Structures are given as structure tokens and as C-alpha cells.
Length: 200
Image (tube, rainbow, N blue to C red; front, side):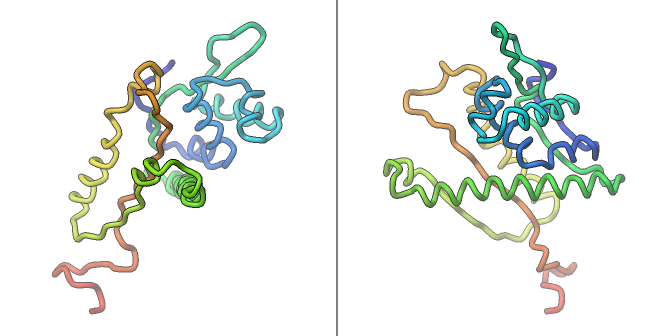
């Protein structure tokens, strides 16, 4: 792979390439399966092979995926990087706008996963339901402290990274688990310099 460690994207064109529901889903499929053909992607996503082929080519055009090793006549794809961070270049308004679109799409997709999990709780094994959580927390912090919390959240699952590339490292009974985390300031409560809420 071109970069197995990390890919950071700020270019507005590349960000816009990510701001598409099917492309987001295709990246997820390839990350989960390791590699897949357009036909396999169509089976997983429920989309047509032609549609998957087109959007896979778009992802490849912008460097997010590449052709994997061929198996006979099959032409599978794989991600170029296991880890991807999309962020805005604040000197470029187009990048900021594109980043908003990507963030909104990702948030909606992951929130839907949580809603689906909640709806399926009555048919899931009890130990899996009890191990899951939906938690919120509010606290006063500076921008620097908030960045520290964000970094800590991002590092929570680092100890499991080697299980992506090597299935033999996955313990018996392991399932694909999703973590949805967001650390944001409350836009409705802008604090003054004295720590009191503005307007209070």
C-alpha cells in the first residue's frame, strides 16, 4: 500500500470526493474486508455494480484506494491507508466548506449505526448490549485542553490496530465494534473571559 499508517486530507477537491454517501460506504467496505471487487461491493451495499465501479474509480482518482493483487480475472480494490483524517485548511474557504460536508455525512452515517444498534438490542446477546454505551459529558475547558481530550479519544482504540491487517490476532468471539466520538464546544454557550456565560 502507498501508506499504511495515516492519510491526512485538507484539499477541497479530495474532501468533496469523500462527501458522498456511497463513497463513504465503499471506503468502509474496503477497510472492513481488506479488499473487494466492484461486484462484491455491490453485494454488500445493495447498489449496482456500475455505480460501485464509478465511485470506486473516483476514490482511486483522489488517492483513497488502489488496485489490490489480482485473483484471476477479478480486479479487487483496497484502501491506500488504514487511517484517514479529513480536516479543514482554514486559509482556504473551499476546504472549510468541503470539510463541513464530510463531517455532516460521517456524523449522520455513524449516528444511524447507533440508532440501528439500539433498535436491535432485543435480539443481540445480553453481554454485547451490556458492553455497549451511549454516553455524554459536559465540562469547562480551554481550547488546548479540549484538544488534549480529542487526542485521548482518538487514541482509545490504538491497541486494536493490528487486528485489522492480521485476522489471526482477533480473539475468538470478536466482532467489528464502532466508536463514535465527538469533542466540541457548545456553540450556544459562548463563555466570556471571566468564565460566565455570555449574556448572563
